[in-house]
Every structure is written in C-alpha cells, then in structure tokens.
Image (cartoon, rainbow, N blue to C red; front, side):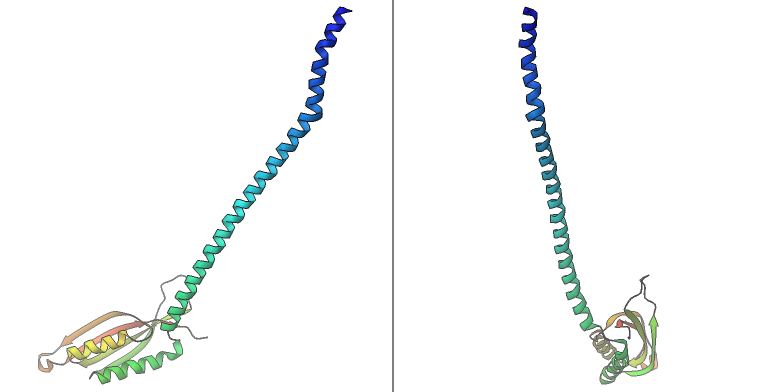
Length: 180
C-alpha cells in the first residue's frame, strides 16, 4: 500500500505537468508561433510594398526626367518635312556671307542603333567657294541651325591663281523626326 502512495505522489505532479502542457502551454505556444509567422509575413509584405513604392517613385522621377529631355530635344529637332526649308536657310545664310555654292546633295545616313528609331539622319553634301573667314561664319551659322548634329567630313583646298578664294566640300549631318 505504501508503494501505491509513492506512485500517487510521483504520478500526480507528472500528470498535472502533462495536463498543463497539453491544455495550456501547447495551444498558447502554437498560437504565439502562428502570430509570429503572420507578423513576419506582414513585415516581409511591408518591406516588399516599400521597395515597390520606392521603385515606382524612382521610375516616375526617371520618366519625368526623360520627358523633360525629350521635350528639350523635340524643340531642337525639326520634322523631316521641314528639311527642305532647313536647306534653304543654310543656302541663304551662305549667300549672305558671300559663299558661292557649287553642289548641294542631300541623302540619308543609316541609323546606328539596332532598333527602330523615330529619328532620321539626313546628310547634306555641300560644295562651295568663298573666303576663309566667310566660310567660318557660314559654318558657324550652320551649327546654329535646328537639327544640326555634326560635320561628318570636310575638306578645304585652294588654287594659287584664286588664292583668297578657297574651295570646300563638307558633309553635314542633321537629325530630324521621321514623317508620319
């Protein structure tokens, strides 16, 4: 009998501890773990949303910058339909500076980019005669024209009998918007 009482005294605390563990600790612990998992998921979602928001704001800033840049470029780039007017303005400024034109040849240069572009690169081949300073003023006027990109190639030569008069050939590249 004494043996049974010892079992009772030892088994009763073990039984109470097991009951407390299964009745209170285990459900509360699993509830806390679920809450932690939900909290960490909410934190990850919040971080992802914050990153997405920063990306959207950065994209908006880049878009605004690109739009401003495009507006600035589009103001300085004429349409292809205006290219004859541009050639006329160049020849008139040359004649005003005392340049005599021998050759005006317009052609389009291939665009370097692999993708389709809304821009074209027409080139104007110009052959002329004039004095050195007049040619410099003419080239300065050409540089100020809308759509001017660069002088691809140029050559000046002179003959001893016509010394103050130089002969020049230039290939001038422009950038214009393609026609619709």
